Length: 384
Image (cartoon, rainbow, N blue to C red; front, top):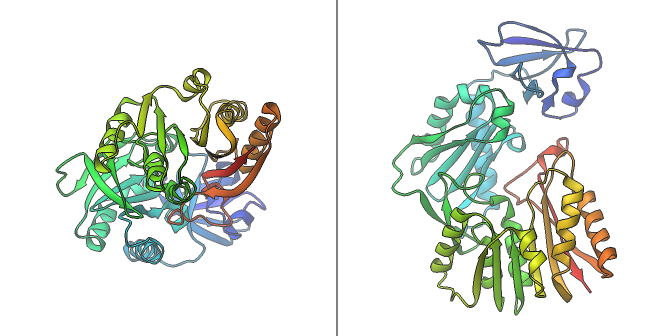
């Protein structure tokens, strides 16, 4: 096992529960990092701090596994996997077959993400150690979920930042089709687990889809950045009078049409438009009772989000509702989104009132000592 010694006074974040130790906090490393990933971290005085996974290439030099000195072996990881599975059994509704099973740091398994789509487990291995440990992890997942196939989608940008190449492909079992049908709160969705965004579906929006359903009765709805139409399906299930879905992705449009078929929705009730959201909003002058805006991460975070919220709010009928959502990044968070909403209301001479906050689903737990684990924010906004 490697020995990672920290610079003076750099141990406190880890001791207080933060799961990352940055490269700038490391003084020296004893051992051979190219051969061993597991490490024991010591402070500048040589006192034990934690055990973790070391990566000399990453800015996140150490991902903490435990503050204890217990063996970090198969039994250790199996216990963590079982703990994550037990939590999901307690919080995921019986009418839901898709959810995040393991949420990396949030389940004390940094570098490992596992999403479940009915009888398919989709795995992301983000760190070199987890990638080296792949065969063992697959064996453990097979034992715990014997009815499931396992597919790898380690094609994230984070993996590249860790210094090794993306990887994707089957790990266990036979895949009859790239499309899987799942249930969430009793509604069916078609998911492409092999090539779809993220691991195939925006699982973090489970609670948001419920809130959309609760607000949609009788409303004319505009769904921006609709992807495969899960927000649209939720609105229609909640009694929306009509929905217009806008997205620029051709593959997403294919699955959106499939979701229309699954729910036998008539085309004149649910209309889909292949277009960039900002271009559509610049051209379209229709007002809607409810606008759903799940904006992506932008290059110039604050400026672009301000423009997007402004365009979306301008399409809300007086007395209507805006669902404004954004990914949380190092440059943009909940406070920034609130500012964007306030600026849009001022610019448009509208009155905006926050009805409720929106966040990632309960099966995306995060540590109170690790705010970086919160990666989705949003608000339901009443617009006069």
